[in-house]
Amino acid sequence: MQRVHDYIKEAGVYYLATVDGDQPRVRPFGTINIFDNKLYIQTGKSKDVAKQILNNGKVEISAMKGDTWIRVEGTLVEDDRVEAKKSMLDAYPHLRGMYDENDANTLVLYFKDATATFSSFTSAPEVVKF
Image (tube, rainbow, N blue to C red):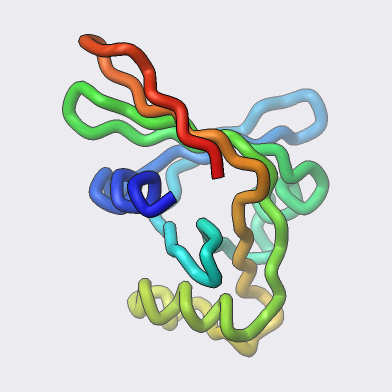
């Protein structure tokens, strides 16, 4: 899981895919954090993406660095603990202008039953489960 985190963090931007009814939705994200031995992302509860995830937690993210890329599929689970929110916001202090671990809007979610696939144009994919 650490390798997955580090790859995504170094990529800087990843793309999160959700579903909205029968319509796929993809958007850029930038938050990734390990807390309590789980891989987390963060968003705001007021956003459509949060509503989509809370309605159907099955998601996929993808990021690319050079000629390699990663895809992570799994189910996102809400963690409403203040400690989880604080850990994320401490890792991304620039978000504190919009979010606070004690507000009603900050949403942190961790991956459950995740599969990460590291790929490139020149080698066989490598699969990691966590």
